[in-house]
Image (cartoon, rainbow, N blue to C red; front, top):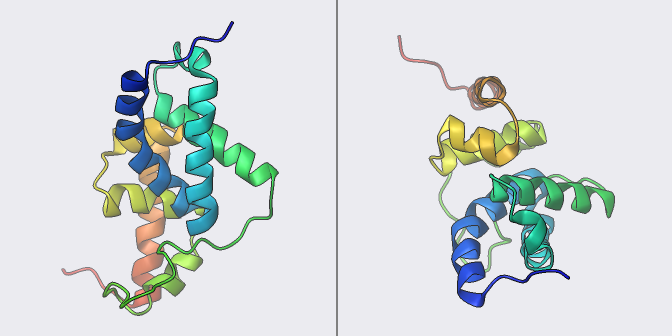
Length: 156
């Protein structure tokens, strides 16, 4: 018989993992699909709590489960990293959205988690289930591409 977590235990877990899980999935899958996948992942966590009991990196495990399930049930689409605006959109570099479109999903997710959310390479590595050197490689490629697309030159 499956063991369900206590409400307090699950609430604490969900508070800890929901935001980075949602951000990573939105960066990889797009706004609507990413948010839906994050919600589905938390439902999966509740329903399969006994399976998660032995997992060291629960957030990373849920990220991989959610991504796999979302990709299985639909076409890939370009991620929109922000909610369609109902008010004035945040002020960003005008070409950023188009430049992000040309990154791979993994590059976009790594750049967003490290540069946008301030996660360490180790945290990002654990969360995405890739090596630290892969995080560094994806980040370097993403930033190099973004600099080129946006015409930014390194200061000498």
